[in-house]
Length: 448
Ligand code: DOR
Image (cartoon, rainbow, N blue to C red; front, side, top):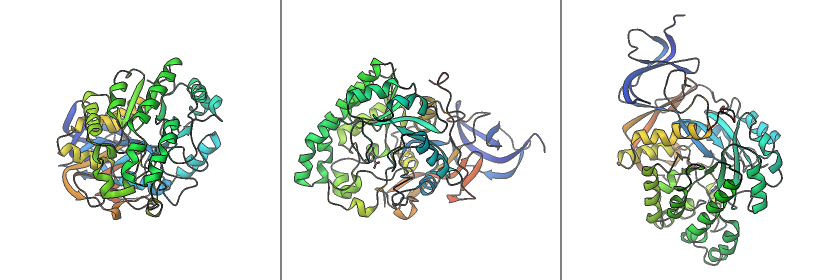
């Protein structure tokens, strides 16, 4: 076979490379990007795709999803979750440990890796939960193949994973070197304030119960404790002005995630329209906070956007608040929402690439991802910035079958998705069989 024969050749797209947006062709072979440039007369391929009019982005990596397998597969599972991912243009996910059983030990991780093999449509890694029971083993656990790192819940959200005690947090932080991901809400304050919403049963008070002080207290505390042992942190789903101001002063240690729902939904309107479907932890807050999140994107304080895809069934969500569980789907709508924000002028496409691909690859030390360049993996997300679509529940692959954005019109849409050099979504339709592989991370010494 000729040197210049590829598996897939993408002709005439606008490719987002480190140089900027370039009108070039792109060839993939054996899962890698093997040529870039004007390839029309010099390269051939099994599969030649005319992608004129589309933008080619490095594959979107969603570094926070809950796929609920094992134990809660009536809400979601790895096949449906990753199918939604690729339909939404996502090529890699980091999955969270609050499953049943919790992901605390090597055997729990292996169960997930086995379940993902041959069933995952996109690439994957899994977090290990940090708790009092496994704190001393975390330095070994976090370096197992397929582990995305350690995740700590400082405040109860969903499931039994909780580490709110300062001595336990210290033990967890001390054992390990990778960037540790944290859900920062102060458990004692949440408990003390729960009576507020138990009395009213009013979901509009969700941001009042889990208020900005609860978030700030936990964030300040974990940054202080991490500094004692010189550990790096990743604060998940930051939702408040006050945390952003604080975190901007700690960027050498701390990376920051925000979510599409905190950028796209707003209190009180979302609670009035959607009731408990808008209920998330930390809560969707008001305009003041949302504006601070956009400002933090512009100022570079934010490193990644992750969806926090956290499905529950509509039946579960229909329980009277606060018995309704917090969480909503998000992996499939992450990119459409961000593309819509691009079209509305709130975000540049270059920054979108930084937040959804280059950012996660950089801060977690992912091998071969986050960049369209020779030798990098051919995980690619092709989007039509002009396409107008209406998001519908019927489009959502999640086993829970719903999205808070049902009926919303957006401009900008994923058209083709390549995972490991294979077209798994073509013209918005799923193709072939699941091809996802375990994500690989740079070893600790090379990791930033
Ligand atoms: O609202 C939430 N639900 N926030 C989380 O962080 C966890 C999640 C879940 O697992 O349902």
